[in-house]
Structure formats: C-alpha cells, structure tokens
Image (cartoon, rainbow, N blue to C red; front, side, top):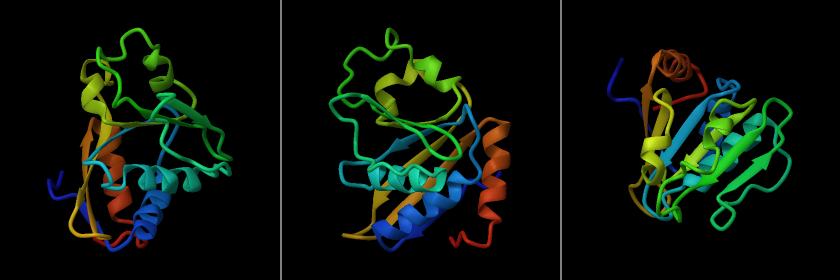
Length: 159
C-alpha cells in the first residue's frame, strides 16, 4: 500500500467535504482514530463524517462527556474525545462501541492505546497554515487498506 496516503485541504469546509466522501466507504464496526494538535481540525473532520453518515444533529467535541452518540440515516456515529482519560479506558466498555452497529471516531487515541482494536484507520491532521491542513491516512488491517484504495480512487478525492 502506498505510504503517501495524504490529502491537503485548503479550508475547514474542504476537510469536512473530504470526510463526508470518506463516510460513504464506512460500515458498521469501523474505527477511525484522529490525532493532531489542538485546532488541527479533528472535530471539523468528524462533522464532515457525520454529515456523510446522514447525522442531522449538531456535532461538537464530547470533551466533558467523553462519548457522544449520533444517529445517522446510514449508520450511527460514536464520537469519542478521550483526551481527559488519565488511566486509559479499560473500564468504560469501549469495545462495545468498537464492535457495535456504528462507526467510532476517537480523538486523542494515544490516551487509550491499549484498548484500541488492532484494525483501524488512523488519521493524522496537521496545520500547514491558518486554514490549510494535511490529512494523513494510515490503514491498519486489510479492511482499511482496501477501503483507502477505493477512497483514493474516487473522483471526488483530489490529493
């Protein structure tokens, strides 16, 4: 698989559009992790995924609740921000979400590294300037390798 799976977006709206396209390739039980500095666009990316999954509610960071659930027309979205977890998430039943009927998005996955499923799509978001972002895709597992090939071959995705 090409190690250079990345997209540069020019605005938060473009990042959300890319995420909305990615959502069309997702299925129940998929897990996406989002790493990046504060303000790198993790929540904006998640908003785009939610839009692509048909979520009508406003999506915002679940910083104080850790997990927010949204019902989409296609699949539910489980949005986790585990930044404030100090001792990992071993007693939180996270695997029920990972194995559930929806798509799980985890911001700050390094905080629960030991609880993450072995197969997942890792996304790293990086500031290039005030509005421009680089989104790097690292598929782990055959499902995600195949999904990334299909996603990057989609005519709506320019990189």
